[in-house]
Length: 493
Ligand SMILES: Nc1ncnc2c1ncn2[C@@H]1O[C@H](COP(=O)(O)OP(=O)(O)OP(=O)(O)O)[C@@H](O)[C@H]1O
Ligand SMILES: [Mg+2]
Image (cartoon, rainbow, N blue to C red; front, side):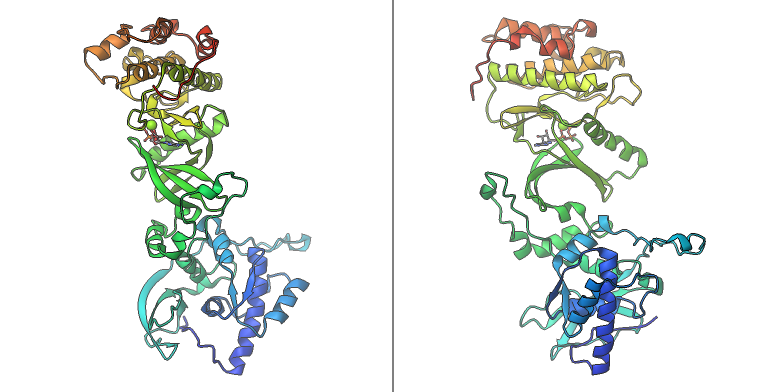
């Protein structure tokens, strides 16, 4: 093991030559390993870091440098360099750190049995210390020769203390096939890139955030937040969090700006860590259902999902609000409710035709976006053929047969729930969770709602029939003549 400290830039000429050689080697190596790397001429301590973290001996496995790289060698000899932030950004995001692919063997190599397999990088012990800067030179008295030292903080003018990070690396971590551990640690300290403005969005300029604010003033907060279980956060890396827009029994939902495309999304993540495999598999069913369904106008759009810190994150289309009373400041008109019901019936027809039941249809899980209704929260979705576990949704919207563990007509469970949800919206107050009114609703006894059309109420009554067979299918519902006449959809009641 060997110990190195950051060097000042006034090195002897022999050191300088050695460094130049190393830079050439490094440039070639990084170009090969990481693809396109942009070099920006600039004096920087990043350069020193890279000097220190790379091997000094050229790797015989590496292909010869391309003419382009040779040029880079020649042109870079006399200068200091900083790898652009994009380099760290795109290449050192943890999700993208993969062992370097060993050189592709040609036909002559096929018989070689001892081509080394890439090993996973070992964990490094990281120690943070504060060091005194004296006359512009770092004091490094207490470091062993086996430690690599990287100066990680920007030296702000006038500051006489800088944070440095000492990464204690074993020789095996210095395998040139990998992104160096120091660089990965450095990635933790690099600020997020600015949020991009999407020029194709007509109202992009109205985004009410300072896209660079995160870099200017909240860096410290970001750094603290970003360091999770594995030290890095895909959520923080890829998204700028705007605000919390909802929370269910199991999840928080945030409005976020995706940095790379400049668009707004909703990201939902589980409230607690999912330690057990079974829990994770259960949680995954939601995204698997969404992904299998694909895109539909009346189903919330799904983008991607990932596990982070033992929580499942789901990126999806951002909607304006849900139909729950807690979120909407106004009561809905009968025309709006009819329209919502028609659109939800189309969503149910779509998912039932694909053999899936939602099992948690309720106003909280129906979202509105630009006047279009969308079914969301597929956390209870299951297969109609009962080949998957069944977890019933909110009891207020469940029919009697589900409460009796009869799962023969799961598609009709959704029809009952939709009827109950629409009845609730028409009535203007939440349905009971138990008691006589709860039982009456399950026996088909719906108190009449004065001021609303009988035709609509009769339809709700048949949707909530105690006998699932007598309830209409989603397809029949979509084709009900009640939706034929042009609906007057007033904005508010
Ligand atoms: N894509 C979205 N766009 C806008 N708001 C959303 C979106 N997804 C969820 N929400 C809001 O977050 C709330 C909670 O989301 P969701 O219902 O998916 O979480 P949950 O924990 O599974 O809920 P539940 O308690 O119903 O099981 C929703 O009621 C809605 O208000
Ligand atoms: Mg929900």
